[in-house]
Image 1 (cartoon, rainbow, N blue to C red):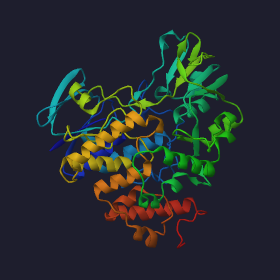
Image 2 (cartoon, rainbow, N blue to C red; image 1 turned 30 degrees about the vertical axis):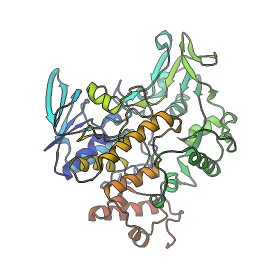
Image 3 (cartoon, one colour; image 1 turned 90 degrees about the vertical axis):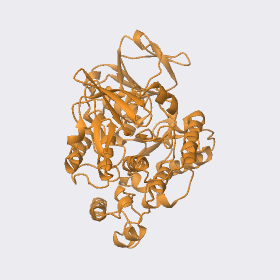
Amino acid sequence: MEICIIGGGLLSIISAKIALENGLRPFILSKSASFGGLWQSLPEEVGVWDSMRTNSNKFQFTFSDMLWNAEDPDFPNGKHVLNYLHQYIKKHNLGQYFNFQSTVTEVCKLETNYKVTWINSNEVYTKSFEYVIIAVGRCSKDYSSLKNPSIFKGDIIYGSRYREPSIFQGKKVVCIGRSYTGSDIAFDALKFANEVTQIYSRNYIIRNKHINGIPFEFIFLDVNCVSKSGSLIPDLQGNIEKTRSMIEIFGNPGKYHPLWEIDPNTLSDFTIFSINNDDYLEAISERKINLIQGRVEGFYESGLLLSDGRQIEADSVVLGLGYTADYNFLSEDIKNIVQYDENDSFLPTCLYRGMLHPSLPKLCFLGNYISTTPGRFEMCAEIGIKHFLGRIDISEDELWQGVRDEEFIRKNLKSAGSPYLSSSFIVEQMRLLGIKIDMEFIRNELKFEKGPLLPQFFYLDKLEIRELARIVVQQIKERYPFYKFSELD
């Protein structure tokens, strides 16, 4: 039995591997000419820039059954990620299932199946599938609601189209957004630009990639995070408490610039947590990047117009306003069912846990929820495929409640920055898959009960994965010998 997988990147690759494990033959439709999705950094397509490094460390941003090369850095760049994906495809012989340069134009629901239409070499093809995975991800389309871009005389660069900083030679550059994209490109632009300004609308809590010499996720996504009970959906009081905790650990963002100061005693709305490189934060501290707090309404001939009437001159404007999912190939019927909003960069659809809908059996979305949680893509793909095959029991009532949850989140919690809480989402995935982590093995044999949560720990019942867990734990201990990963050491 075939399963159609739409997309050619990381999500499609892991979906194909899990499909094969469950007796399904992947039929992958990729619009590009090779593997890797956005990690290919193709010209004029959504991709990563040359200097970008992952937000997640390589020990936790990995598939459970293949480790990174030992020489790869803690936070890999795009070329490292692409190489890792190519190695994974080779390991599982997945290349034979890809149909390249195949642009999907429509997915329609039939009585029992789905009709998928695509174009390859100017020829139109149509095929019926019982199972379909939409794996283009939430970062498949740039997001911007700014007015009058056509009247601006300078250059407008979407963050996903940016590659390297020489394009800013001698220019006055303005980057919009305090996300990782806007911040990292602002720092990169310093190499060539005459002047760099960053405009942002709200303050973030800063989380450095390393804390006390180790990746910050080693502490905040450790082995014990899955044993803690908590709400899946963000709540304001919980966010306020976490914000205060983050300030105690990382310090107040105001230490980098007075405009970033957050008063932990007057919090009244959600605070978003941002991951930043130390080099960027140093540039802010040294006032190499000009900061302007305000909301950008749109463009005028020579720059940007803010909501308070201020005009900011620019030769080049970088849009770091986020991404959304491009699901325009879905039929109008399916779009209506999932409540697709192409302009909603927070939650473009309303589904069960970002994946399933009770009115669309055997159709699954992957990548709607972005987080740094270990094993997230692998477990989501496994949930979708096993649900198709009746190997996971999710009642229709539970599915509908999940849809209502996302309707509530979309309407009321956009300022939360994320629809779900990371560690609680891991616990939810484990519940759905019936996974229980072998803490006795981790504590007594690996001596790692104070270490980071690793993707291998979800699959310790498999001998191959158990041995990989031993290897990666040893790598981590050798890489960070000063850190105490166990009380038994």
